[in-house]
Length: 311
Image (cartoon, rainbow, N blue to C red):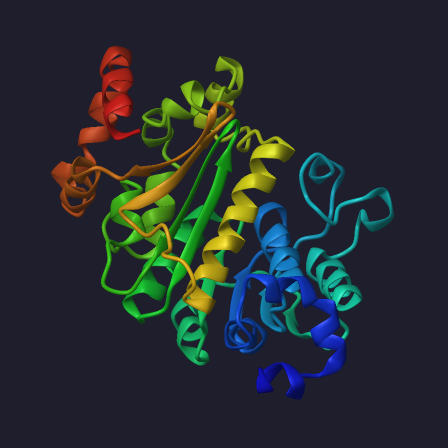
């Protein structure tokens, strides 16, 4: 209990309710942790605010976007009075309103793909959450973090379906669990993910995610983004912050790959990325493997069977 006595009294009062669950030593781990967040829009914004309210005081944030009207339906700090403002600037202000002693290193621009490795290795991060709109960048950064021995958290909502997963050192890579090209470069992942044929194989977005057929077709053609609703975005973001709290305190076991949180309006459960996904990811490192998905995409029945197997 000496730790509590020696703590800054204001911090102790702000997070007093935490001590009914966390020991003083665990709370101090939260306070001193160093967390990197890439993007503070939907998921990243919720994670940043939740961690701040958990007592985390050290965060580095990359964010180059400004709030737009289309963000109102789900992003925690997007209001009429923040439209047009940089999301990172607004998030930092919100965190400092929660805890004026927080140390927020804001880089008000997007992380560049060529910076991924250097940023991952530049500090002793305790956890990294890539939550950028640039999905190939997020997947590449997840893989780079795992390779560097740093826990990284994936959280993404696609319509009425969401996944959250902790990727731990020594475990599977994100690219293999997500049926992307195993350990590929950013440029390779970007080309792969932006292909209409490769997007069409994600038919479970249409089924599990509750998308309309018209929206799914627009997504496959690159005309429309993921549809999203606030409850699923906020649940997945909050679960991501919980995974980070688990990792930082050591209090509970993370839901780590190949296991993941599977979230739909019908409930939340722990599911598992199958071995078939991971084998296909490795096969796609070769040209003949990359050709498999476009071949499936030409046959709607095979698309439905294949996506049911990998979902």
